[in-house]
Length: 385
Ligand code: SF4
Image 1 (tube, protein in one colour):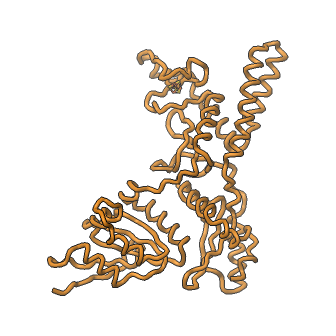
Image 2 (tube, helix red, strand yellow):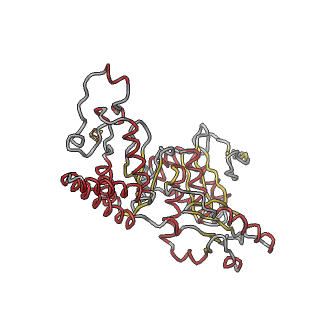
Image 3 (tube, protein in one colour):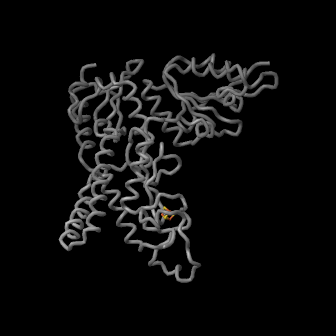
């Protein structure tokens, strides 16, 4: 019996959508393999596996799509990752891209868009880097995380190298500012909240409030504005505006000294010293995201080179390589606009965290690629292919 195929451009941009018709005498795996063998080429690109009900269950990328896709059918054991994915797939779609870098970016975008369940379960684990996350909610706290995970609305700082040391530093910062570091999100309240007067007495969730390292929103000890002011100080500190935190402390210490309150002055001095050493530690651990600001020319495997305008580790624009002086001039204008200093904070929006990690890892693993970059907006180095 013949095998009928229906080919279509899928609405999500995976342009080689193919939906071979099921025939009772053709095994689904064999059908998919035959489709890949017949159609796929060894070029860079992204691919997606769809379940029988059309759900995208996995997105991947490869420098050599055909080889990669065929490898799914060689899984020797049914519990292997590839074998498990392809067993659930009813269709494979793919789209070619000019380079491995383009494929990597597109893979990330497709994963963020569709959140395929196998990508979530088998997510890449970038152990080198960590971020400081400022959580949302009533009483925000600083936490160390590997990626934005599902919370793209929170604020992130980083990336930093060395999660263990970063965790210690963040704990110290929270201690110094009196911020909570627990995960009892649901029980936070403030002294100036009316509901408290009717509620039962609260007990601290941990010792930190009793030993003076946390203002204690779990027992509704601080006023909301008091707690939020400490959060703002923490953000300013992580933004590199340490004077917003250190200067008031210095001032308070001097005042305590003048008033002969030596015990208080000593406490403030210790705090000041801790914060100064934390400032230096954060500076050492922080990965230089500013260094990832440039134009990056990436050769296409079929001559379709592209230029990526990268600012602070994130791709802000991408265009085919210009073909004439006028196009270069337009690109230089665009680069100049993108390079204008608009960000007053070093915080990274949650939705940009994964891309920042991707670029950081890409250039860290391939430092030779930096030779293809040029500072913004000066692009003349890139004009020679
Ligand atoms: S004292 Fe309360 S709010 Fe502070 S860290 Fe402990 S449990 Fe959390």
